[in-house]
Length: 302
Ligand SMILES: Nc1ncnc2c1ncn2[C@@H]1O[C@H](COP(=O)(O)OP(=O)(O)OP(=O)(O)O)[C@@H](O)[C@H]1O
Image (cartoon, rainbow, N blue to C red; front, side, top):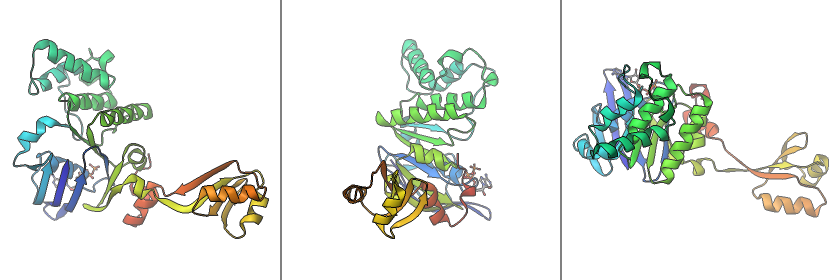
């Protein structure tokens, strides 16, 4: 759906995007994660033909960008940095203006399309107000409604939850998952680790303009070879496991063992009751820390 090769953007002395090879596959919910100023917005703008690359190549839905961007844009929904809107008009009116350059159809079809987009983002009820009376979160939703008008195959969203409260963030997340289940590929940028971890199936991490990591979240969050064990008789468990317990916190133990089922069988055979067992996995935060070498404080936690 999106492929870039050695994609580079230089602003004078600043290398905003540095030889990035990106691959977003059909069906992905791809999270493009990086701290502020790492080049996310610049890359998203290049994908949409809004900024010209200094060098490198872009393919969107199999076609080269910017050369054939006009052919792909009707199949792409985009939300880039601060949704633009005519603030004296209502959200519905703004969508109608946007829709006029879109898929066409009769008046009823258009009206239905706009209603549907407003409903999807939870703005159907509040729409008589002019956009200048909207909160930032509502404007963000309106921007998303605009991106949905074309029923796009691909959504490209730059920091889509900016300005939303936790409830709003959850609603957008649920909406994006639902759209994705119905066949839309989702590419979004964010500086929020937790957001990407909760929403995405695939992650690209950018740092100082370079893509330092790209992989499926499930692969990145591999098991660590340790098991979190809960038992009311921790002392007995420690005795049975003989040196394999790395950490103990009350009735919770961290045990070096690759197989929770085997560990369970072993403990039960020795008469040690087990209340919970879970293979430990790396968090995205640990993964990001490993590849960037820097403190994760540069990436927002939530
Ligand atoms: N039009 C421009 N002219 C000069 N420098 C720019 C321009 N746009 C971006 N930059 C620089 O390029 C680098 C990457 O910026 P970019 O906005 O792409 O990062 P970002 O990851 O999207 O950050 P943020 O989340 O803060 O928007 C920064 O150093 C920025 O100052």
